Amino acid sequence: MNNQSTSSLNDHYNQPDLPSRLLQALADAGLDPRNLQCADLELLDEFHIRGKDATRDLAKLAQLQEHHQVLDLGCGVGGPARMLAQEIGCRVLGMDLVDSYVEAATLLTKLTRLSHLVQFHQGDMQEMPFADSSYDCVWSQHTVMNIADKAALAAEVRRVLRPGGQAVFYEVCAGNGKPVHLPVAWASNPGHSHLCGPEELRDCFLEAGLVQDLWEDVTELSLAWLDASVAQRKTRTGDSPPRPGLGLLMGKDAGLKSKNLGRNLREGRAVVVQGIFRVS
Image 1 (cartoon, one colour):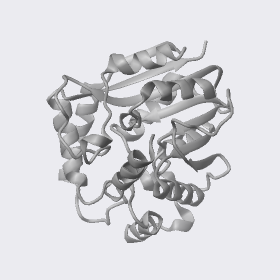
Image 2 (image 1 turned 45 degrees about the vertical axis):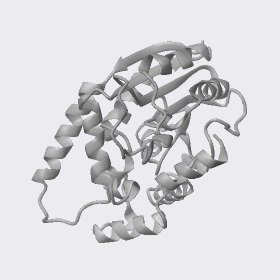
Image 3 (image 1 turned 180 degrees about the horizontal axis):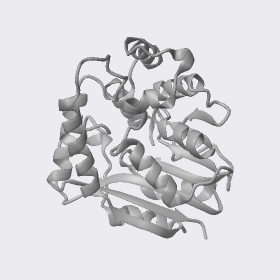
């Protein structure tokens, strides 16, 4: 990724003073940072469709085990990494391009007492500073849409995986060829969005030498979850302070980004797929 595109993407995702704003949001919700639980972060932690359900389902499909070393690409503020550590016992390194996300992820992991299992690194996933055959699993949820050279990414994923290791992906792809409505969570302008068709994405991993174990379209499941989330928000009462949510990560136009995501899926402009590949 060149310096100009990296800077533009950082501008899209970056939220100034995110760690301090998160601490304030926790306080406003009546949460004690000294006794923070992962469940307290449920509305914030999973920056992808279907939230924790998607992470749990993928981990089960991949049959992740306690001893597995996982590299979480585009880790955001670290929700999936913490879940894999807390619920399974995996050791996870999260990697993200955005400094403020890495800082927030490190803070939240410390507050939830999971730093012994989860760490974070700022960097470009197309140029990973890791040795060959370092990980049992490379994990990505709604990340690849920001990567133009997917073949280069697939080659890096293959390089850092150990023999028998798995690449686990849950991604938004291009649908019927019509441009997506913007803004969305991953893009403020067309230069940020690098959607490709599902078959093209799958072929990148196959051509990198990985073997396909799972590939399926989960668009309908994603839409059902989005609809249920909207209905739940409409029925939520104001009796208790709201928990920190994804608006902290998506900014002032979070509502429009979410609305456009649903619109793109309904109009077939985008689809959602998940896949598991392995090193034979």
